[in-house]
Amino acid sequence: QVQLVESGGGLVQPGGSLRLSCAASGSIFSINRMGWYRQAPGKERELVATIAGSDSTNYADSVKGRFTISRDNVKNTAYLQMSSLKPEDTAVYYCNAHVVEGISYRSRIYWGQGTQVTVSS
Image (cartoon, rainbow, N blue to C red):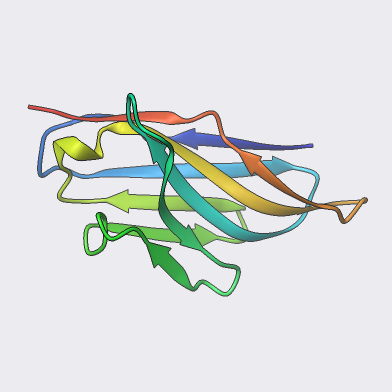
């Protein structure tokens, strides 16, 4: 089993910054793609950003130029640096990871429990 734990959410004023972290632990052989998604009240979950094992990145148009995704492969951790935050960025942010499990070498997708980000004055 693999666990993903997000941290770093909170309340921030418009124009502010936050850094989210997603730490993976458990029986891990390797992690391929990692990503951040978000879900606002009454809306569907949407992709925010992804980062591949090669470190290539992909962003939603709404966050390009404001958010940066990165990863530390030694720590099995992904980060989302969010800047110039807007009220419409308010949502629960979820991390996911495409994991190759240790021992079984089976590929599975895992999700974290989510962390709330609120942008408000």
